[in-house]
View (spheres, rainbow, N blue to C red):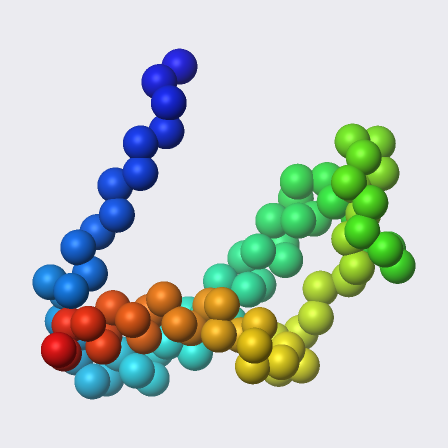
Length: 89
């Protein structure tokens, strides 16, 4: 098996239209939902505390997007906004 080789995209070369700003929150919420769904699909269960052992694999229940603090939602929205802002510079 070959080692992973990261190949980042040259985002300063990408320019998105202004309308893309409206889509960013929708895509960010979807990314959060995909993440939460994946935890369940990967065998994680929801419990009071995080437990990483192979037999237990529990995490606290996911928080609905609307209830997340801005600090957490920015993890999803900031990367897309960086593409746009770099493209406009």
